[in-house]
Image (cartoon, rainbow, N blue to C red; front, side, top):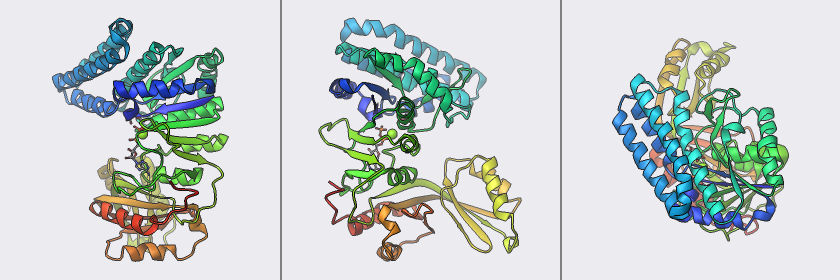
Length: 457
Ligand code: ADP
Ligand code: ASP
Ligand code: MG
């Protein structure tokens, strides 16, 4: 079997969903499980709606819900025609009634908890999976919706829940395998899960890729396909640099590093289950299905270039912790990291000196509370609007003097932190957010102008 995951833009309107139906129809003999994201921008709108309800702005929230209802009805109507749509209309209508009920409840209380936020966000994938399934059925593909909340069992860390693998594998065996055995096509929403007691959770923004990998790993897929809106993993974000080129093949480790440091095309957790079961992941373009995309796999051909790609993560804050006491004081770093742990704030890049530690965190984490806690240990300063730039390539292990070449290209740029990753395959540094486009374009020109045709298109 294979898993085929379609992202938000791939199911963003009727025309896109028609392309999905064709792509799935062409692969039926491979026994696909289809995993879909919410329609493009819907998760953002649901989260906005949730915040409005939490602030007591009930009418504003209900208005957003109304426009979402219209968009989903119109798309379903366009795909199914009046007669078939009438079958689905009641089902979608019940979901929107439940959403509106939730909005009224939250507005009355005037508080949005992470738990209710997850409940609201889950509607996007629940709705899109029903519409995509109905569109497949309308084209005589024997598809059935599987509720992700019955398969993707997680802990209760709302908004970024952790999968409970044993429980999931058991549920996949009970709920999805029999459908495949019967020659049917299961269609499941990504991103969404539930605790053992059935409370809705989500597994983090962009998490539908991860859902696909969880399903692929649990069912022993021969391949996990991530269908998106670009031709594959590119040498850098094509929105940042018009010269970005397609990477034909890349290793699990390189892809994981790129995803972790901001290549949004793949959720960072996607690669891990694939590595554990050695399942190749293919990134493909639903608007250009003839393109062979990017193959992410364990074994890759030798590459003449040092780097495979540049990733960028914006919205970073640098936290500087300075304490003369650190001089010879063992246990100081532990105390700092314990504070990060208490606030559940993940750290990306770290650099230390005798008296200070600098760390980078995502700006949307709860930094003021963390800083107040750290201030009990030392002087704390933090500064936002930074970006991490990360160059990735397995050849970094072999080629000496590369850091020198990179930084001489950027001799006029204010570089705040540098780290040559412990994995030995990345070179990472932190700059001002405003400098990102210029820096990426210059590095791309310097390191990606003459590309090995065995690896790049
Ligand atoms: P989906 O909705 O299909 O999950 P995403 O928007 O999450 O799609 O990811 C695809 C986007 O990732 C692309 O449109 C592109 O702008 C961005 N991106 C960032 N870095 C890269 C990269 N190295 N290669 C390809 N796309 C990238
Ligand atoms: N719809 C979710 C999001 O926008 C998950 C995904 O698309 O992968 O974050
Ligand atoms: Mg995505």
